[in-house]
Image (cartoon, helix red, strand yellow):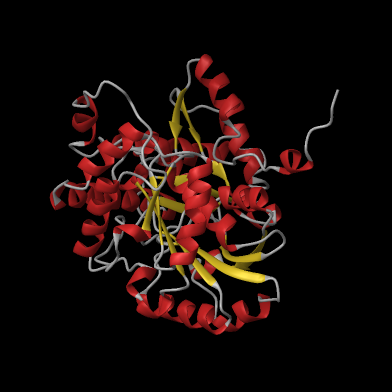
Length: 412
């Protein structure tokens, strides 16, 4: 039998999905699973999206332009200008999801063996994209005790080498929920300009900023015109994860010309979904305010439960005596990265599905090890996606509390 590629064998499994077989086995036994492992919103897709697809009546479903439909890109540019970001439709490329946008950015800007600096923990699939592109991830460690705040620039400087070509941030962050201030973005701007680096900014959660905070895109900084590369997506903003429509944006014309060649190689992004996404741009501001408010309420419920500020039952009161739970206050997105009082979070997450249920249900989490370049750094952590409505989230928090209390490998 022929050998498989080393690249394929080294491809990391998704920490978000690798426990699916255990969840399926638990479901087969009649146990209800509260899926807090994946950022799949339960809020309805933005109005207008489905209606536009249903109205499609052309006799042939054709390829679109490799950069995306011009009408969509023009509408996209107009919406960006409405947000105070001056960008032309030629500076926007529509992609098959934000994942493809980021992969095209890496392939366009970095050569095999080049390095990209990423604050750690980071979105697990960055490891996979880097492996595909032959790029080396250099983690910039952050601390849960500091709320995963960006470290001082001196720490970034110490990690820059002759092979460093880019910095990648997720803003707001998946998995930590950290929001970067305009001051922090300007500090990164100074860093990348001083070392002539690209700044990739994954802004797919831009609409989810809480506590009155305002999201600032790196495209708002004119001095980054040749450096900034922004990724967006309809998945979270419009609650349309299955549409697989993203966008790659940059004012660097040479970069966009190279990215288009990758776009031509894969032919075109999906046609019907682009129609839906273009219609979604007309959604009223009230839709986003309602969605943001719903997620902020869910965040508050989860953070309060993990901090034991709300005692829902005796189980949580018992858990109060268990030290070691750390949950920073996320400022954006719909995730929180937590430290749990367990010997190994991978084992705990698997045990919750294999050996545990509470009132007929259990909880599926994403183990923290997959969000680090060095898995050991996330051994005691897990990511929680607060994407369920509040009644189900309350049940999930109760089940998680009881699971932590019963887990044989708990650390007290």
